[in-house]
Image 1: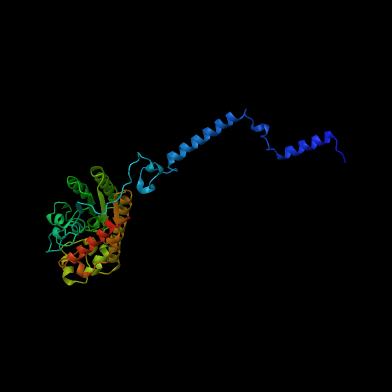
Image 2: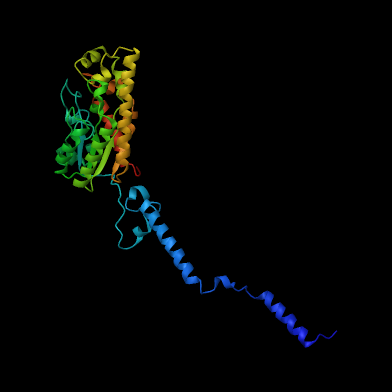
Length: 328
């Protein structure tokens, strides 16, 4: 059948229409685009500003929290901070444990067997430094003080800063719990404020120095182990950590509650040490000291509370493992 020319043109036009892309409707014409784009742009800009100020986009200022960003890969970016597992100088801060108290003789310091900087106990310094340097003692310094509490840290930091050590070790907090009574213990809030301030000062004075923070030992565990020795119990009556060791043989409810209160306070101190240290990319907290179960042989034979030479070696071993680990 012959199709008329008019019908062929209509059919071709219809076929062509089905193959073309649908054109925008009149509502999306260019006359309304600038105004719509202006409103949308303002909303996006405002939203971005709010999210940025609230931290929703994250911040790359602190590599310990967010890790490297794309900017780190640019030619002008600062190199990533890397923990040095072989520091070449060490300063120790803390209390009687780091002074080696009662490890060599009764009621006296013995820093030569200190776990951190001692020369006669396979200390941390001896493990990290060269043999000649460790023996000479020219690159290790002990600023710890028997009886020190967290409030004494700033003074110790000031003394250490003059030496510019590559590594500082900190073991503090036992004396904040070892008071005349449980009521006299340093509060968690005060401990946090003081330790935060001390670490801030350390970072200001020594911006590149690495810091190892040991946890506070388990004082209740030391009581449990040391009370087995009759002589040790007599020494405790001289006033060693009375909040925990007073009336060491009493197991009544009040005595047990008191000891548990001290143990709980030590746990809170350790939470503070972990939290504050964790905010500093050059600080490593070590929970191993609190978790370690000291044996009788690892306690002083004069007071059965402070670490003996064997106990000091164990502390050195724990610190060495943590400091030389490839990752925190």
